[in-house]
Image (tube, rainbow, N blue to C red; front, side, top):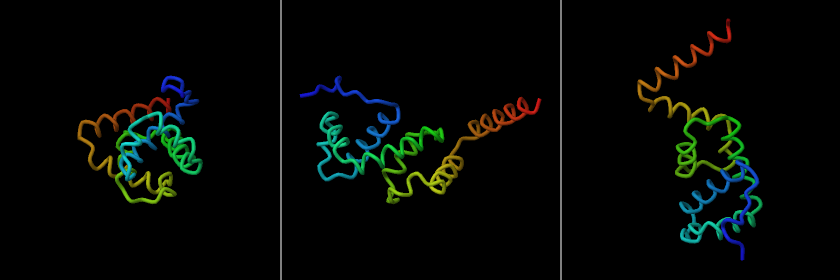
Amino acid sequence: MKKLQDINLASKKEVLAFYIFQKYMMKKSENRLEYRNTLSAYKKFNKLKLIRTIFLKLSEFIIKNRVKNPELFINLIINSNIPKKHWTSQRFYEDYLKILIYNESIDDAMNRSLDFIEKYCVKKK
């Protein structure tokens, strides 16, 4: 039997996909304890090809778009009843950003704005 250390996750995308899958299944599955064991959860992740593809697509979306606060984004997906096909839609991501910005502290908003202005000015020189 393989040990957990022997599991070779090929990429950052696959590691993130497995993390999201495990977290999702621990929340949604009737047999939650089964997914706490990383090795058995990883076996299921590899066995369920369609599910694996969905989570790989989601992790690729998070990495490619450099999602701000990915942990919050993942929790929003897991705790919402949004269909899996909409997880990687631009509309869902825009709604997430609106929530994020609305709940952002004033200091964070000011820092973000000043960083943007600084980058914009450097580009214009």
